[in-house]
Each structure stands twice: as structure tokens, then as C-alpha cells.
Length: 425
Image (cartoon, rainbow, N blue to C red; front, side, top):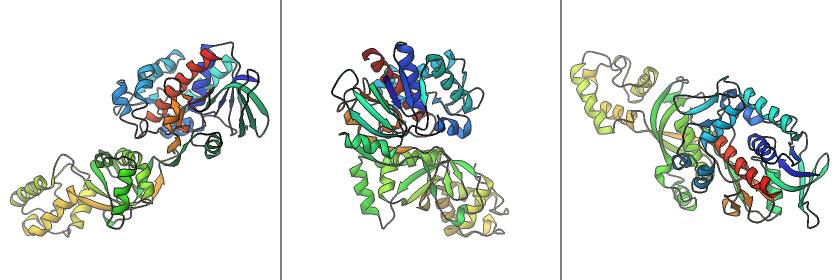
């Protein structure tokens, strides 16, 4: 028997358990983890460096990074935000560094620092961490002080309160559904785009700032419009500007990942077959580029087009787009036709690529979906349907773009739930 049982030994689970035990040291707290190791996602986050949070300290601005949860998180972020997360770690001797793009990592650049901090805190506070304890049943009890019976593959436990922090776990979602909660069907949220196209073949590793826009194919235009309406997505949400990385399998980078998050449900409905338009020169429009190309033709007539990098884009990309415009290695500016110049301007500012499929972004698998937000009280993170049951992290239908925002959602939800639990047990 425990006062509080936390389901899930990940970021939200540990953070919640630590805050419960610290707020009320008299409580007995246990974490049930299905695997043989805890904090697996923390370990691989940020390429093993652990992107703890993001240096955005304005709650309203912070919410804009959440395709699902933007409205619901405003109040919670006013209660517990990025600065509070920093203070938590610094109090425990973990210094966080802010990088140029706003991402924050431990100064050691190792996720093990965060893992050691959490494990050390659970030991200090007497929190029991029970591994290999996959949950197979949750029953609400009517009698005595204990509200819940939790059955794992190893044991049966009783608890007064439960904090569910199981992340994207289909078995737990199914148990919650059977108990009366609505589960929004989960779909992948952070993924890269699979593209086979001559223009990017052989230039993997090229990275540049670009404007990217998701558009339907001729075949699925009807499905695209239906999905926009179904998920209340504005087309502007499916356009982003940011670093784009050309890979062996297609395209990745923050600019692409932002689109994968905002378009998660729509792209799933399209079975990951769609098109994107790319402006490789986001500071220019097609007419402006065309005008500049004509000027170069006048001034640099004797030079070959291939060797003249007319704009600040990677050389290998410039060469590829020049060739895609029907201009050969030896063609000089003076010799290319009006049609070729127009094609080059279009390639630079309005390239269209067909996407066929997706790939998981490293090991940082994130899903859109989970417990319906309408069924949660965001002042306490308690279920509106099942009293004494609380949530934190990705088990609920909140997800974010890449950059430390998913962790900040975990820290905020876990802290608020912990405060509510500690006061009421």
C-alpha cells in the first residue's frame, strides 16, 4: 500500500514523484516502470545531451509551440514555467546552458546528468522505484481510504492517489478508455519527410534556411481540405521558415519538424502522401529573384552559371537547382534563354517536391493524441471523470515542436499535479 503511485518512470513520472515527496515528506510514494530501465527518453533526448527546456519565459509565447494544448497550457505556464524548471535543476547542482537557438542543455552536455539528478532525488526522498512492473489493470475502489488498486505483472498495489505519466503507452490508454476516458487516437508528431528527387540526390548534409509549405497533391486535394476543417487547422499553420537539412531519405531539420508537428493529424489522414513547396531564398519572392538574375546575366555574361553563386545558398544546392532548370555545366549567363532564367527563378523560390512517407526523428518519438483535454482540470491536472486520478506528460493530448518544449510540458504538468496530490492525501 502506498499513498501515491506514479505510473511511468519517465520524465514526468520522476518529476511528479519528487515534488510530491518533497511537498509532503510523510507520504509513501512509488513509481511503477514497465521496463528494466527508467528515464529512457531522457537518455536519448537531444542526441544524448538532453534538451531540458527552451529559453522562452513568456507563458503566452511559450504556448505557441504546442499544436495541441496551446489554449490549455496558458494557465499552467503562468503557474510553473521555464524559470521554475531552471531553478529546480540549479538547486540540485545541475547548471543549464542556453544555446543560440534557445534550447537548453545541462552544462555537462550529457543526459546522464539529468538521470543521476532524478535517481539521486528519489533515493534521498525514499521514493520506491519498481522496475519491470508493467501495469495490466487499474480498479477504482469504493471502500476505505484507498481509492485505487493497481495490478502489475509482478504484484498488486493499493493507492490513495494515482499520477498517470506513462507517455505514449497504448495499453494504458486502453485501460483509461475502459474506465470512461475519451482517447484521441494517437498519430506520430515529430518525423522527417521521405522524398526521392534528383534535385536532392547526392547532396545529403546540405543545410540552409528555407520557407516550406505543405500543399495537397492533385489526387488528395479533397482529403486535404476535409482534414483542414476536421482539425480546425489554418493553412498558415502548415507553413514554416527555418533550417532545412537534406538527408539520405529526404528532408529533416527544424523547419520540417515544425510542419510534422502542426500537420500531424492531417498528414496521417493523407497517409503521408502530399507535396511541399520550398522557397530556398525566404527573403525573396519569385519576381525579385527573376529581376536579380537578369541583372547578373547583363553583368556576368562571360561566366558560367554553375560557377556563379548568385545568392547565399549552399554551393551544392545551387548547382543542383541550376541543372534542374535545364542549364548545363558549360552554359554562360549570356547564352541562357529567358525560359531557362524563369525556370531557375522558380526552382529557387517555388520548388515543388512530392513526399511519400515519413521517418522517425532520431529516437525522439513523439505522438499527437491521448487523453482528451476536455476531461482534465488544468488547475490540478486531475481527471474530471475519475477523482483521485491525475495526469502529466504525453499521456494527454498535448505535444510540441522540437526544442525542449515537450519536456517543459512534462515538468509543468507533473509539478501542478504533485502540488494538488500532496495537499489532499
